[in-house]
Length: 260
Image 1 (cartoon, rainbow, N blue to C red):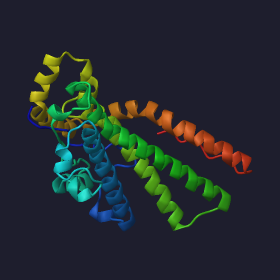
Image 2: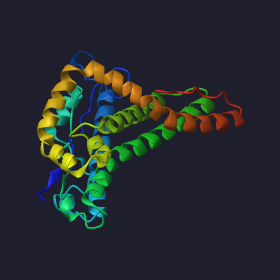
Image 3: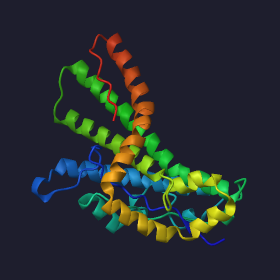
């Protein structure tokens, strides 16, 4: 079977999510720029690395031979996709090449594609979870110290941005629409002949979907906001609750319950 390409990770500007600011020359802040560059680089690189690593674990070394089994952003970021992310709010990374016929350690080609595809969004959920733990840690230190300087503000901005972007990236890529990861994840329920027939037209559907994202971004934003809510509750709520108990035990006022 010829090599397939996993989706380009498309980032969508959602007004309610603070991880998606668009740079403005009129209000260019060097700290915000550096935070955006770091978050974009880390999040997209980890997403694509997760695809490559899982494919390698399934027995396919196509991505590894292409130099994609690394966290080096130079191997993953697409120059045009990165620039459009910064200045337009929509961007992508270079697709990871895989050859499902080489999934020798998977029970089936379909299962191998499923595991390789879901690895990207799961990596972003993991990174978002770590970011929220770090945010709560900094917030606790802020409560204990009675105040904070510019460094504290910068760290809070970094971790909230890292959380928001990664959750958005994960949920967006889990939409069951070709060429997003979600189609390959939820497509396992489709009959094989439908599944592979649709995948043959993945690139064309991707172009159509990108056009729809650009012209119907408002509708997509509302859909993503709705889907993000349960994810935020599953991650933010328990972590924040644990830190609230720690803060109360230390005689500190509990931090508010951030959801969203």
